[in-house]
Length: 179
Image 1: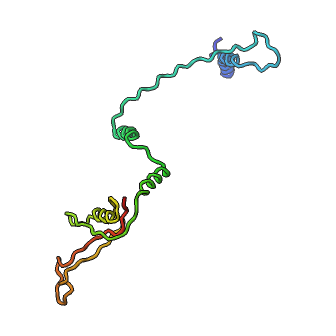
Image 2 (image 1 turned 90 degrees about the horizontal axis):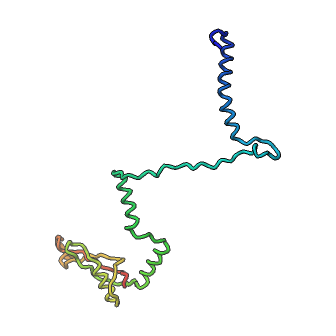
Image 3 (image 1 turned 135 degrees about the horizontal axis):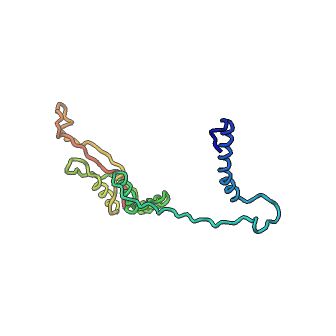
């Protein structure tokens, strides 16, 4: 059949018929895969054939390649720090530890002079130790201090000009935790 001789309307119909005839076998194959919705007993020829599921082979997991860079190095640092640091304690465990540390301790009061260190600052650790030793304990830690000014008697004379070395500040431990 020569489509050029047909009028344009008939040529379109012929082309549509040709396209439809080519599409029908593809549609027929698609329908054949689904089971027909019939009721009752089917003959063995009409029963659908069950296909075994195909096993799809997944590609192998990609191999991680080393990515040198700042973010990668920070990630490595965090991974290593999990094993390097001790595990965190719960608040209850921390409280119990602090209670056990504080049990043998006793707070004492008194007055012990803090020694002046080589840099001029008061060293109240030795003052706390002296205060605790005067009460029968081995050592202590100062929790309260006091300061006073000790001056030469000349400072109190009328008309005396006060000089830089006439007075000095003395520090004292007044309360300490002893063990």
